[in-house]
Structures are given as structure tokens and as C-alpha cells.
Image 1 (cartoon, rainbow over the protein chains, first blue to last red):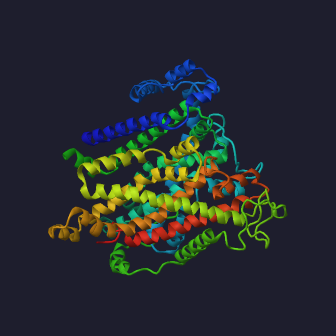
Image 2 (cartoon, rainbow over the protein chains, first blue to last red):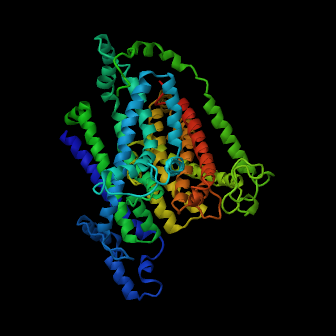
Image 3 (tube, chains in turn cyan, blue):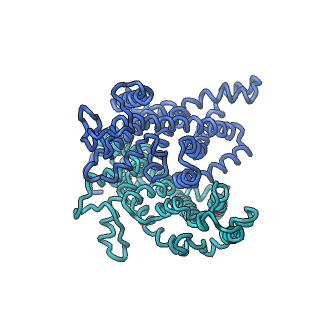
Length: 318
Length: 298
């Protein structure tokens, strides 16, 4: 287990370093002069050099990167150009709605997918299975930005239960918070839901053909008990892996969902920063996204080890 | 969970095992598959011949007579938008942009990614470590955000969007080709070719490539679907193609401004988009299940 942990941690750190380097270098390789955004066309060469130094964009790239990373580790990403507000402070506010949105979407996707996957595998080839096969391929084919608009057209009414835009923090009013987050979460959940249900169905069908299921059945255990206690756990690996890897896709998808439903989250923060040429915010936003992604993957791999004793065991011997 | 009750009939694993030989028989493609083929044929036909077909009008002409017209009207099949543009014609030209971007990007990505995937999967060792490592890192970046940064700083020309999308498609495609190459490198006919003294280049080009190619082509359809969605999302966020080029995403975004009163401006292009993506997925998935060695019993 220790050896397993060490290799995973090492890989996570490497990806984190390379990813942060990407985030930093993005602004150095992209064309255009970042100081133009702050100084305008008629800034002096001295002021320009000073700004470049302050933003750690001068000199050789490795020393600039080292300085940027050191400050980033302390949570200092500099100040925004236009409003001169601390980037990390804005980031902290923006990160919460995105994380909530992703969490709710994952909860909806995984729980509904588990139910669908079990029912589909239980009567494979039946009418429910066939209907779900079609519905899941349809759900996979609807982009998040289209689904969001469709739901707004179909469900959202002025003063009705479903609301199209807005965000209320959980602390202010949990009820209104969940009410507003319902449509966005459903929108974001649908594509991963379909993927998870398919993965679970395939794995579950394989598990149900194992000898231990036959044994359980010959012991006279009920179908429900066999499906939930014997079948589900060994069939969950693909689903969990996919759910972990999907976090990267969810961040991308949440950009469109946040834009549709007017949620001031991380995705929109990055898009706005890119459009308004807030270079330091772009760097910080990208770094945070990479960190979330790496942590999620690490968590999934550790969970893997907990769920499957074979992985723990094999690694500790080998 | 209340749906599954203990009174349900029992699971019978024996039937599944007995049914195994039946799976070898080729299943008849479903009606959905034929619908998908038909839809794709129509879309491709219209996109190719848009300029010469009499019922496809200029997508940018503002015709006040059809402004805000509801769909399914003889004068404007899909209705008109706020500026009096014919939505049907706009969708046809949008199909052209989507197909060009999707196909060129996939072809380029397959060429580059396929090359690296073949090398990594066949030569293994250091090549594999380096290529897989780089693609792992590339995959750990949220693709859409990278694309947004790229197009908004670099420009929104069609070739720049294609280059951006290509960069992002190289890593997943190379990973896919690598996996298939790994499987085929272990097969007997490769060992036989080696024993006969065939050169490595010959084994790669004549033995492995022809086997990997069908799977790669099946996945290409799925890749085109993903790229069409990515292009639409970019347009939706305001960093997609310039508005001088008709694109489904652009029209959907413009229709958003008057969602309540004229939902059809959003609905018509988005239905076309979804049907196209669905068709590509259905056909790609079907071909993949036929060619993928990892699934069928070898």
C-alpha cells in the first residue's frame, strides 16, 4: 500500500508541476503584449518593464516561473488590472459555486446511474434496457449548452418553481440555494449520467455471470440482496474511474452551464478573465483547475485501493 | 431502491452463459442506425451542394418578410430569426462549417496522434514512456478552457480554431491507437512476419496499420461529434468562429437574446446539432463494436 501511495503521489506532483508550468507559460507564448491592457498604447518603456517584473513575465522563463510558483504557493496571485482587487480573493468567491455545481451534478449522475445500471443489467435485453440504451445515447449527444437552453425553454417560467438564472449562497437560504441550483445541476449531470449508467450496466452484466453469484443464488438469497450486496461493489470500478476522470470534463461543461444560468463560478471567471485580458487571473484560474483535477484523480486512485484489496496486495508484494 | 423487491424473479447466470454463442451472430442494425445514416447523408448532401440547390438561400440576407416567422412555413422551412434570416439556409451553411471543422481536425489529429500512437504501441520502452507521459499531461488540462484561451488571444479564424482543436485531439487519439497497436503487436501474424525476417517498417505498415485503421476510423466519427460540440460551445461562449461564417452555435447564441418570445430560433439549429451529433455517435459506436478487438473475443 505504501509503495502504491508513493508512486501515485509522485505522479500527481509531476502533473501538478507540468500543469502549473503550462498555466504560467500560456501568457508567455501567446502573442500580444500583456502590458498594453494595463498601460494602454502610450506607456513608457520603464513603466512597462516594471509591470513585467511585477507580473513575473520578464527575464528567462524558468526564473519567472519559480518566482510565480513561490508566490502562488503562498496564495498570492497579484491584483487584477481593472479593479486592482486581489486575484486570490476573487478566486475564493468564485470557486464555491463551481464546486457546489460539480458536486450536485456528480451526486445526481452517480445515484441515478447506479439505479439505471442495476435495472438494465438485471433484465438485459428487456424493454427497459432497450429504452434506456436509446435514452443514454441521446443524453450523451446533447451538449450542455443546448440542454441548458432547452430546459429553460421548457421548464423555467417567471415566478414558477424552476428558475433560469441566479445564485444564492447555501448559507443565506438553503432552500432557495437548492431551488436555483436544480436546473444547472441537472443540465451538467445528464451526459456523465448516461456514461456512468452504460459502464455500470456492462460491468454488472459481467459480474452477474460470475460463479459467486450462482452460489449466492443457490443459497436462496433474494435478487435484491444479490444485486446490491454481491453484484454492485465489484462492478463499480469503471464507474468510479470514469467519475474521477470526468471532473476535468465537468469543469469544462460547467463553463457553459454557468454561462447559461448566470452563475458566477470558476469557469465563467476564467472566460471573463480571458476576454477582458486579465492575465494574472487567467494564470491563477488555470492553476486552480489543474489542482482540482489532480486532487480528484488522486482521490479516485486511493479509493480504488480501498475498494479492491487485490490492488493493495499486488503492489505491496511487487 | 424500492423498485427492486425480493419478489422479483431470480437472476439466472446460466442462461447468460448458454446465450454466449448467439452473440457471435451479427445483429441486424437497428432502425436507429439506419435513421442515423440517412440523417448524415442528408446533412452532407445539403452542405456540399448548398450553393447550387434552389431552396437554399443566402444565409446572411435580411428578408423582412420572414423575420420572426414561426417554423414549418412554405416560405421559410425552419422559420426566420429576428434579423429576417432564413434559419433553414443558415443551418445548411452551418452544417458546412461544422463538417469542415470536424473532419479536417479529426484527419489531422488522427495523422499526428496515430503516428505517435503506433510508435508508442509498437516500440514500447522509452518511446512509450515519453509519448504516454506527454499525453497524460495534455489530458490533465481541461480542453475547453485551453481552447477558449487560445482562440480569444490568437484569433477566431477557421484555421486557427482547427489548429487549436487539433492540438487537443492529438493526445486522446494517440492513446487510442497505442492501445490497439499494443493488442495487435502480440498477435501471431506479427510474430510470423518477424520470424520471416520482415523489417520493422514493413510490419508496422503492412501488418499492424491495416488492422488498427478500421478502429481508428470508427473512433473518428465519435471524434467528429465531440469536435462539433466543442465548436458550438466556443461559439456559445462568444469565442467561436467569426460571425461572418454561419455556425449552429452562433445562431443558437443569437437566439438566446429573445428566448421567451421566439424559442424556435434556438430550437431549430440546436435540434439539427443534436441529431447530427447523435447520428455520428450511433454510427461510430456501431462500427466500433464491430472492429474493436478488446471487446470481441479473439
